[in-house]
Image 1: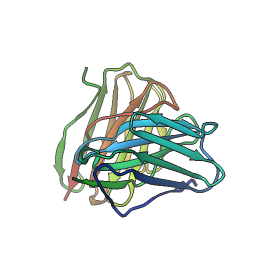
Image 2: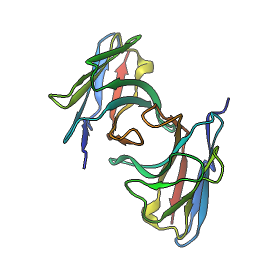
Image 3: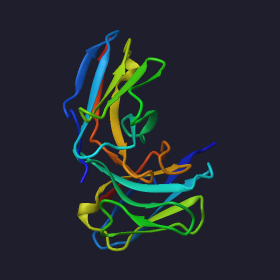
Image 4: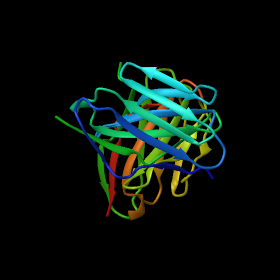
Length: 111
Length: 112
């Protein structure tokens, strides 16, 4: 079955720096890959979707890359702010019906 | 616009009791999902539905049942609760498969 790896250790960075989070997967590549943000006590909120034939997607300060050769997606937040502190989840869409989620990486942005 | 609403928000049960978690969405979405989230395990899919009257098993369906009698509602039932079912349960919906999912804020369930 598909396995997704996200760094379980928290990522600590200073305000203004670029945060880079990694999502690695095994087996075959998904058709779509999605990134979500989750705040404590809340449900995940969708951020970005990237298709297997897209190399990069941007939305404001967010950028996602998708490398099917490396079986990896990178999620970047530029000019990070304390308000960006949250857990970020990647999710793979294998069959256009359901998602498989990673365990998430916690990001802490200090002033 | 409420989005996805989960009821109740918190609940404590005794082992062997039964209960139903309700998920309601007002976005006219076809697809609905039930997940559980445990520390270190991430979100795991319990059951899902691709339309009114349909249900399908996810990754961890044992001990749970679901029903989708109305398009806007997706019910998750625990027939005989066990301590291993202590978790945070999230409901989500999407317009169709492959689209982003909209999540509720979860039901925190403790089983003693």
